[in-house]
Image (tube, rainbow, N blue to C red; front, side, top):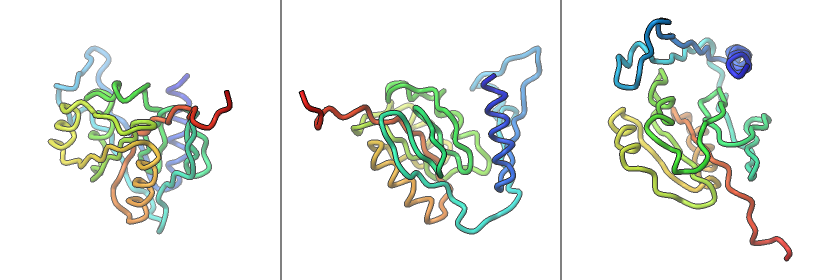
Length: 176
């Protein structure tokens, strides 16, 4: 079911300039991260370039994000022009496996902006090392600043992606 919905979303978004295709592994073999990376690579083909067509994050809340008018619930990966659910709960779930999506993209992204929630949190150094070895600069920030940084870099037409975790509900202004 989720694959069908994701496929339908990506096909709908393909008319906006990008076409997503994935090379699947043969049915008799399951490849892992250490296997042939070229065989597993997801490709993006530019179908039509539109000036100023960058994805913008309009708002965020504890429930999710408003990205180009699309309501996204929970953590998400923003890969212009696609917006995908990202299977992480907290910054501790950001692992080499969870960021593999970002380093398998073609064309390669220059910068990955990671929003860790309400506060800036320390990401496992092995994750940062992996991304840097793939030629991707990493910017780790709290989610509010990560959204602003992503929008700024997008407006400069940089090849940028974001992995964002919604900040929890603030209790500072609630009445007791």
